Amino acid sequence: MHPELSASIEDYLEAILVLSEAHGAVRVTDIAKKLDVAKPSVTAAVNTLKEMGLVTQERYGKVYLTPSGREHAVRIKRRHNALRAFLTEVLGVSEDVADKDACLMEHAISPETMEKLLLFLEKTLPSNK
Amino acid sequence: MHPELSASIEDYLEAILVLSEAHGAVRVTDIAKKLDVAKPSVTAAVNTLKEMGLVTQERYGKVYLTPSGREHAVRIKRRHNALRAFLTEVLGVSEDVADKDACLMEHAISPETMEKLLLFLEKTLPSNK
DNA sequence: CAATAATGTTAGGCTAAACAAACTTTTAAG
DNA sequence: CTTAAAAGTTTGTTTAGCCTAACATTATTG
Image (cartoon, rainbow over all chains, first blue to last red; front, top):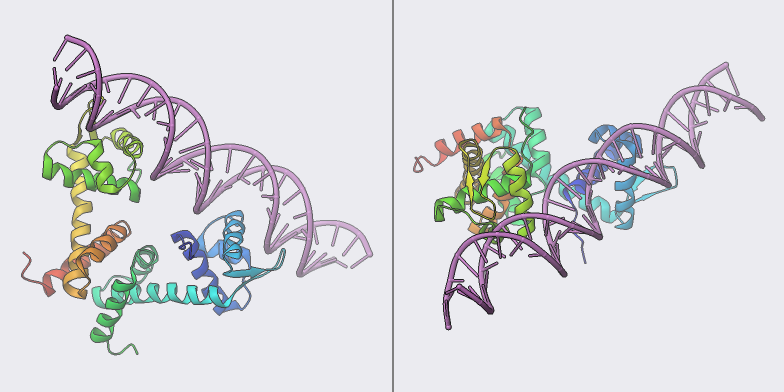
């Protein structure tokens, strides 16, 4: 049923969410810049996301998350944030390295591990609501 | 100089180390079983590892780590073990999920994060020397 | 020691993901 | 409005990693 999102596709989806929070509509060029890939790579990824029903796009136009796409993206971003928080606030890893590592690790983490990590963070850093 | 090992190649290298500890010599078939891939995939990976000077192999024969290959493999396995220990002993993730997650995350972790994780584990679990 | 089983390799093909170059469409300026 | 720049797409390659089927080599065993 759910073809499982690849790490690459998850990165695109997350980038689209972040950019949409900053700018509203999301342009192919901005996604390319954010992920440091060429525009045709974005076009290809967006087409895949369209087929999966996770984004919509008018021809030659802006990209928008569908409700389902937003749900997925939010889940991915939560993983990213939890990992980054753990790396910076618990381990004391520097911001930029933490963000890079989180971005790579976020695709690997299972639901069980995610759940346990959130519990751990709540317990350890009650400051974060 | 160092072409950077891909996640896939790191998995092969680690598997070869683990199998060599258990059986001495390492057979293509055993690598295939361990990683759940077809034998030709192993042949291809082993060829890549040979080109990189990380393993040796006699035609149609066993695979051996070179000193450099062993070094790399040990470093990879250390990452894996540290991650698994963190997942099981700190977060309380179940053994098999922890192992699977560790196997995927181990390729993403930077030297800085690795170092900080080891410090954290020492502090938290002094039992493990 | 021959025949068969197990092991390893080659050949050929597929998919995902990236790129550059060239093209189309939209936007913005004059 | 027309044209130049910017944005987006198409086309055609490339690379890594995997697969199956067929073939070659080595090991086993009757």
